Length: 609
Ligand code: M6R
Image (cartoon, rainbow, N blue to C red):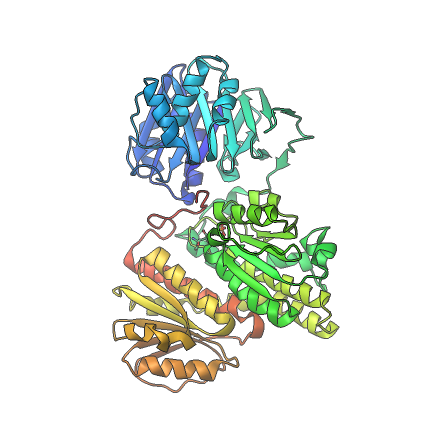
């Protein structure tokens, strides 16, 4: 989604702003812009790639500026709607959505302001300008103006002849970067690694003033925050290499192939242990996880699918009832609160607006046992939860989530084993066996990745198709959902995931020779039932693509294509079976020539509702 970079420094900050925007491209955007002071305001904007903006900015020199990549919410993608938005010498960039913008716009129109865009952001620019009439200080004006905004925002503001930049956040991420030669702000740490590793994560309600040699932060209550006592300075451990493509063509491809190391890094947390410790989830975990009656998992998209797999594990291993709900539904539903329930938020980014709001909603109902499973330390969701498990997938840049998913699964399996241990349902031998199976995952995934040439050979047969059906049963049903999501988001082929047993209750009507049916067929207790379901497809002329285990038995028949995974993996099998589906969607997208890492209309971090 939208990205912000801001800088005030003794060096020329124009290349810093452009490089920062380039680093934020992965979040998804449709237009970009910068505003710099020299000392009057220069604004440059373009629709399309940051490279086009960079060409426009060539030769510009400035020490003070703000920049933005926009993902359209209010108003179509166009230059007039691209940020920054200005109001007489004042410029604003904004991430988020201002819910009361229409009402504020009426007021500002009545006061004589002329609007040149369809955005909610322009309202912020004029509102600050209007506030400055009675209070000439930019920082004070931003404070007073933002107090009138309803919704989520991270903003950066600059004005002509002013030595300071002002930034503010409420419900959208923003951090400060403390550099040697100046100070910086961005919506994502990766934008600032080029100039500093020293970061301060702003909290909701914070407003900060940045000068070349000083910063000050005022918290929601109006109190000055002490640094580092109230706002800690973090040394980012992100490496520039983590966000480089290296030998790969796409981030998605890189991230699929990084899964063995992402899993190994995540599983370092258990070392060679034969038993799990609840402390893996935080110091308060032994108390919070004891005596649990049920688990509620909240998430969106791929993270939701990880939750669906976890439900099978938690109920089977721990005997604890587990429900999984899409965060955007839960947050507005009149659900029945259960303070004894563990509420688990799963999120790669830790910033997904609906997941964050769903956790806040659960807490507001007295459900204080909260756990974040997240890939980004210090993200809003991590900070909102009492307990945390940080996956170590490294930055995930491709919009299609891959390594974040498999590391989430590893974390959730550890949770299931921990709850099973707490419930006294595991022998020492069983527990050690589960941990050994987890530790073997990186090697097992590596072997699955070796199937790539065969999967690539299949991809060409999908590229001209309009629709595809993914089938699975048991704990592989969520993998069917995930396979369908991957295919639709990057290749734009309409795909549905179904539990195979549900086929004859409706989707079978869709099956004909033009409908490829992809099935996950591990050699488990449901294999024979699944085979009967696949016969129903074959009888209707459907083309079957089956991902089986080495020891799953299939008779050869026309229209049936089988690829075998090297190992049969029992409970953890979903972690392996998702990998060929990621590779399949990647190669279908390559054949179709779509923008793999930045699929149309999508964004990496969904920070708005
Ligand atoms: O950062 P999160 O895990 O909270 O993101 C949730 C979804 O937006 C995300 O998984 C999305 O579905 C992916 N693009 C799927 O590949």
